[in-house]
Image (cartoon, rainbow, N blue to C red; front, side):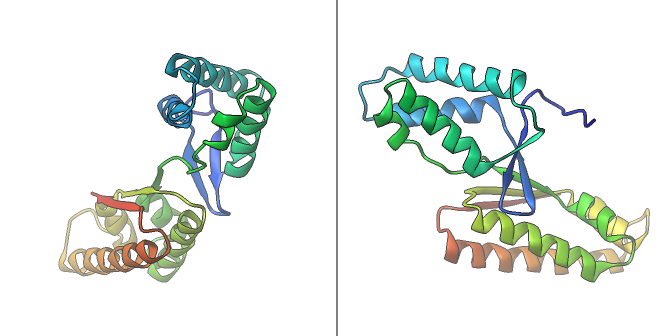
Length: 187
């Protein structure tokens, strides 16, 4: 059994990415869906708590597909007579955090090509999954892991630059597919 850091399942986006299902994101999504309708904001917050309770107490899996997540919410809203809110629901998946260090661990020390392939798979998955915010973090530990060193070296500088360039190219390609996407790289 997997111990989740929270009671809510992860949301699968595309075929290679997972995002945390966070309470604030659910509330914001539902509150935004009520705008332009006659449904008060407090009701959206109440519905949000219901979604959270269902996911934490009754949903059997540890991962739910983004499409299934939104379909369940739309169906529930419609059953409660809130079809206008269901139609207004923005189906943008939650923000995705990509751990570069975890990808480097999966690739193995010295397997930079495998690392770049894994990173490409993640980026394609989130781009085509409709994500609007991507954060890549852990670039320095990632570089040290791939170079197999504890101290920063010229080789680390070179690989850091390669990864940064790769991410910059991915960012511009993602912007062509999804102009609303924000892309951040943190050390």
